[in-house]
Image (cartoon, rainbow, N blue to C red; front, top):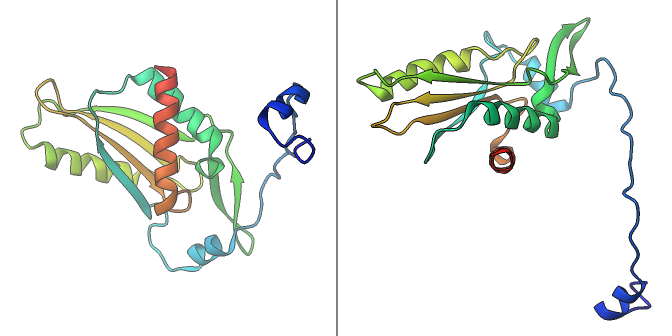
Length: 185
């Protein structure tokens, strides 16, 4: 029709509504091979593989509501399979698998309202969040709202293992999270 009907009006006259195509994805194997960059990562001598993270610390205009944020993070993990990856030692190397997604990304609220030095408190709590990621059992991503009280603006920390996120993908994840959260609000 596109070649025969060269105008919008002509196309509109022949356009029909079609049923959406449902394409079933094949079931994921229980475990699967690493990609070359993942293989490189696991070949490196590292004392703390779990702690090779990237993070963003955001100052938000309004504090997030906990229930919609948890739900938004769950949906984010549903859209981005890398957030559900888990890695385990296997005979001859490492293998990866997808988690069921129930705890793919966790969310917590930390009350820092009574802290005189907010920057130091955020740094202390952030270090604990960074150290808490686990390649084998998950999660590979954590989100934490640092509640600074009524007089100061809080911060949202997102920490993700580098096997699941890169410099370019942060923009996509943040945009998706914003859209999902706003739709739930």
